[in-house]
Image (cartoon, rainbow, N blue to C red; front, top):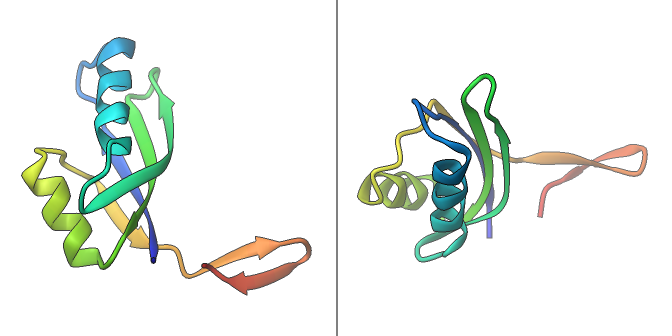
Amino acid sequence: MPRYLTQHTLACLSRQGAEALAQRMQAGGTARAERVLVNMLEGKMFAEFRADSREALEGWLKTEGMHFDFLVRIEWEMQGDKLQPAE
């Protein structure tokens, strides 16, 4: 299943609010966040999702009311010293 990276702006969310949002992202459904990283000082959240397609992820985020700044498919990643197709 393809992986995607998203960035979200956390407008005035507390740490507890960011944690609740991350838990919702990891709860699953059409898309599921495998990894969530947060910078509270700058108000940014990054999430690595698995979803069947970009359209499926965009639709799920919209249904969940989760706005995103950007969404990109992860196509390549470093494994050891080689750039390999992402799985």
